[in-house]
Length: 151
Image (cartoon, rainbow, N blue to C red):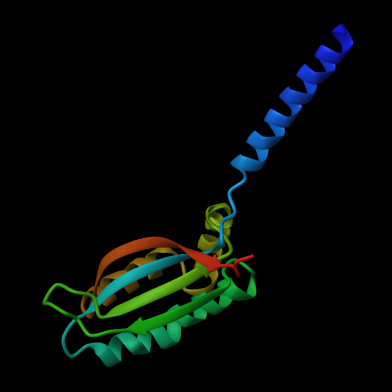
């Protein structure tokens, strides 16, 4: 009799534990995707061609080197109309596998920029020159959400 009660008690506890585990599993119709670093840029009036020339040369060369080394997945340049005097009109997007990979490869990316763009002094000169043609308004990280089919 005691063994039956013990068995029944253990069975009840086991069923309760299994129901909690099943209940705790949430069926999410999505998964985390890649991470995007997005720069919001305001190009100064009349400087669109100058900035696009920079993007098509130095910026692209650096992005391609990062991609070739496997440090980034892809990159994009999007243009938009500004909706006000203080609004962005260019977005620079760089895609990384995930946040951990992006942070782990910071030193490698810096070393690669030294090779592709030049030493710190040359990079600083480039920053100063670009101040004449554009203003960096913000820099944001965004995570892509991949929608899965419902089961």
